[in-house]
Length: 441
Image (cartoon, rainbow, N blue to C red; front, side, top):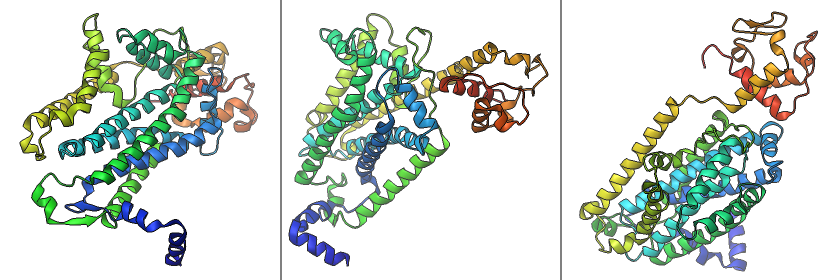
């Protein structure tokens, strides 16, 4: 049946040449698990595109409604938290996948002639991926997103001559506000996807023209040549499925909570970037001041990007074995070790930092404002009319608490607790405070 359908389509669409181009291309040295990262990255891009489209159905890119729309997705939309979790953890997985793909190409010397253009396009794809992460981070419009973006935009402002202009373009004015959010949203869902799809197409076109590089050993590459289908397709599919299952588990088991809604007057808030920006976040701590600051914010990043783009021309010899490239491999190793050391130091500092969830602080203020301590006791303070709340976080879950605050009678028939006029944010903040009351936090 399938063969007859394929024959019918082939007679109309001439699919056989397409099949030969996509599936029958020979791989020097044969199929290998080390070649799966490019396909995994492509799969994760499509996962981001699909989940992003569903999120965009409910998202409102305005300062008045952005935060509430994310909260609505989290609390009211069927499968909303799951889809948002897929999108969040899919972004992290895509950064890992493209990083491993670039590392494999670097280690195998696959950037060397005649594949210089393919490497340069890959570098641009890496930069666009980081651009996706940066522009998407602002969209929830919570405190962390606002202040982290503020830091990033201020760094762009340190670039000489064009910094002020670039900042105004990114902000859409003198302050981070409605036009900033609108522009970041447009760039995130329109400009960057269009750019990345064009570069993916160019990347694949170049790959088809120059062919896969294969192993770095010429002898091993010459021993055999194997078509992309079926073994490499099978390996790619297995890895895609594995990556998808990992992202699904993270989306189900590791929630991505919102901080409080944006408060531009709260200059004491300390934003924490995503893990893939932590090394740079830590590096900036050691490069403060009028001299070192600009070096860290634009000189070194600009030089690093330039070196990546120029690598095929700085290392133009055809030898691809790592042993024949000690300087390049050594510099790359030092860089990677430095990145992981900085990430480790940043994680250590963040764990040592005493941080209180802003939602918990707001919830505690609501508890005091509504006079809840007149009826309830927490660690010996307050009345004894209602239940003791000292360890309520161990006894009740989030759904029960929200239902109780909306209508006390629905969970505790006969309760004398009144219905308080709580909006959605206040409801979630008060719940966060109750959940923080545990024996062990």
